Length: 118
Image 1 (cartoon, rainbow, N blue to C red):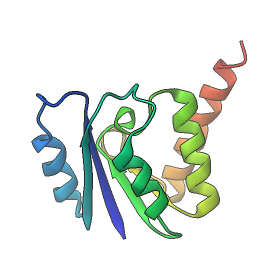
Image 2 (cartoon, rainbow, N blue to C red; image 1 turned 90 degrees about the vertical axis):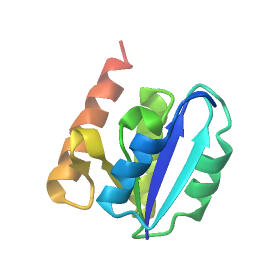
Image 3 (cartoon, helix red, strand yellow; image 1 turned 45 degrees about the horizontal axis):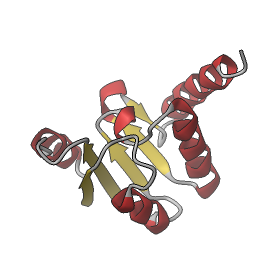
């Protein structure tokens, strides 16, 4: 199953451009919410993460839609890898269903971890 996740930070913002991009990609279902990225609990994302099964794919338009910080994003990516869940980030052309996408995301994660040590 391919899930899209769309998020905006305030109720006044519009999700239409994210819906359009996710629909164009061909997701089966779009999960969305209007909540700040710094919120500790994002109820719809948490439900989606609990729903994902091995082989599923989650698609976001930008990396910052998914995580509040580099550390959280890396933790999510590591969890996805352990659970055999794929990640597609549309604006960066990252698709972990491909070897190149996995490689690129691994390199990015390495830089984030390295930067965090100093």
